Length: 346
Picture 1 (tube, rainbow, N blue to C red):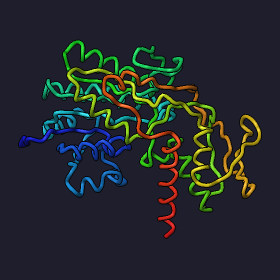
Picture 2 (cartoon, one colour):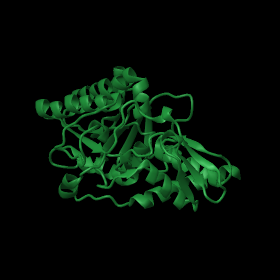
Picture 3 (cartoon, rainbow, N blue to C red):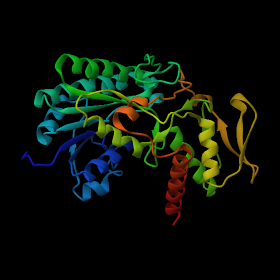
Picture 4 (cartoon, helix red, strand yellow):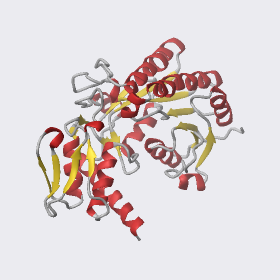
């Protein structure tokens, strides 16, 4: 493919939450943006359709399980920067499909990194790592904290980080770095993730389209940020003089219970909790109806109880800090889902 003066970026996982925000961000900076996607029976481009139609993003088909397709995509795109966001990204599903999780989140990274390094030893690579690598590590967690994953997802991500980021950087001088991002959410979050499940379900209940829904562990604590704030950090990491790994987090942690209460508040709903344990419920005080129940099937086999990120290194070295407060994030998501549900009614 003919080279241009534009920087060229390849994003795997471009159809996901982070990939779509990152594609928009890079396009705004004048990059030639390419996205590698898997073939799917439904429309995988729903989040990036406008970018594709406006020719700001070029889509190519490939799969981290298929080295031939990876080689072809890299040759066709000649990327200066690669952002590997593709993954089996559901922690709960990783317990049910551990081999698939390892195949994509570990071996897939190796295929991509080796193909990229062979085509262009000077390529810069961003690897999407995760706070789940810390697992049971005592908070706050930063770049010096020990890793102790408790899920197949966290284990595969950690092994990829150790083998293909740290080791390849040291042994081959490859410019590759990990963004150890703590939980980050948005209206583009998949509907099966707990935060989006809450805001979408509550919006439907608010409009009388749903009676109730179920959650698992309400007391799990997470450091939740806004995905749109975080993708800029992916880009900043690849603009540095040397590759380094960074924890990206807000430095605040909230329980699932608090997220639920904030969503209710954003939607003008008055709720209260009654009962304990698996019999605990949330009641809409205006109607007296139970709108939330606890289902033990939504508990993970091994739970990460408390994640709280320390992003002091990123703040110091990159001048970054989160722009969106937790309450604002929840309101952004709740309002977006309320508007989406309303549109479907008209």
